[in-house]
Image 1: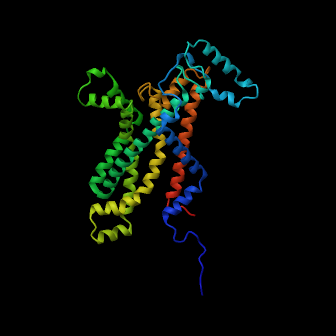
Image 2: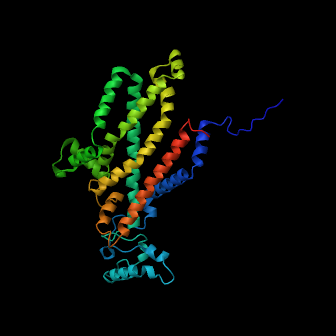
Image 3: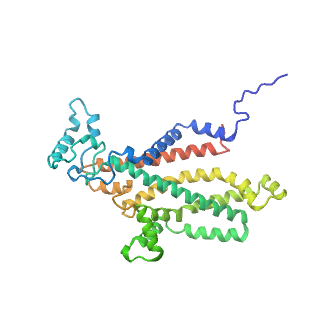
Length: 346
């Protein structure tokens, strides 16, 4: 008698099942595609941006978006006010100044800088903060948590009390104090490590201290999760069997504990990335972000809200881009969590 098994998932690897679950989530796939496109545009910003982010034209200040004309009727009545404003601006331009309105697809800011170009270059800042913040948090938190959980006893207790003390500190206040300390004063009077860090920060356009501030506080939750998962895994049968076989501490961590910790920790870190982006946005909004004229979505929002009643397009585009990016990370993180959760039923 022959028995035929029709279950197509029989013998399927966990990685294949996870990929299939992820692809069945349209929101997660859409979020991943959006993030991949955003990363490609940010990486090749000089090829996608119509202008350099610092190129200004004071005779084109607050120029309305050229896109207004694409969504109007046959006579473009809806864009008439915008065209009149652009014509008035062009009348003030000296000979040789740019008068091509199509060069400003999303409009211009108060200095006549192209908003589309600044959004594209600003994506570099947000994605860099997301990647560096996530990398520091993941590496430091995972190492700290797995060490505390594996060693246990008094060492575990002492290490987690340090985490509790740091956890009690307000994250934003700590980040702001760090940035104010390293940036306050006259740079020519800085000495020692402060002068060195200031030079590195200037070379990175003001992003170094953002990385440091986020990295100092972002790993705490990861350490707690890694420590808890390690304690849970230490009581499993395969760990007991590995100990009976005489596997050393390093082999136990790298071959048994770490592979089982990666899934939950990656999911947690993916869900934390929007928080890093919003932290950088807030810091740039209050003037502690990147150094001008380097654009950041937070600094663009800060510049746009002051004229939002008369020129709403200046704040509209960075807000929409920031919202879409945060939603994309949330959707992709939810899909990744569902795909990597071994307890999820098919």
